[in-house]
Image 1 (cartoon, rainbow, N blue to C red):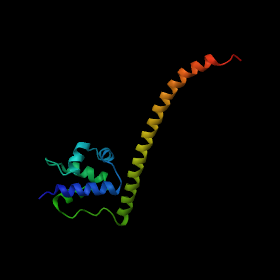
Image 2: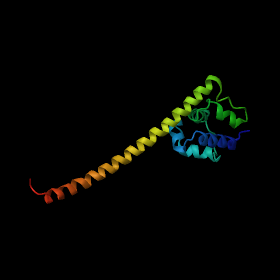
Image 3: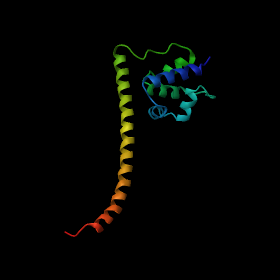
Image 4: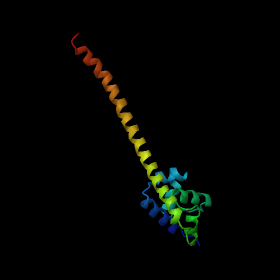
Length: 136
């Protein structure tokens, strides 16, 4: 028997643990936000492919078959310990770096939009100040 609620709980818990947003998970897994939403709220009315569950598992720094095991009630493969723990830790660091990169990109875009708007104002106000400046 398939337990989609267990899959939802596993995904939501892991996203909170990392921390990772739905949009970030979609980008990392290449799975649509709509599909993730269905899985997160256990409203999946259709069967999901093993590839979809594997992609989400990988994006959450789990082994490929982790969510498939959760779905079927099997014991999920270990995601840490020994050298695998170091790999998992590295994955967490990389996930956080991805988050920071996205935030820096968002901020840079915002600054650029402000600068472009400010340049437009400077150009128009600059002409006015040139007219008011005494000749030197």
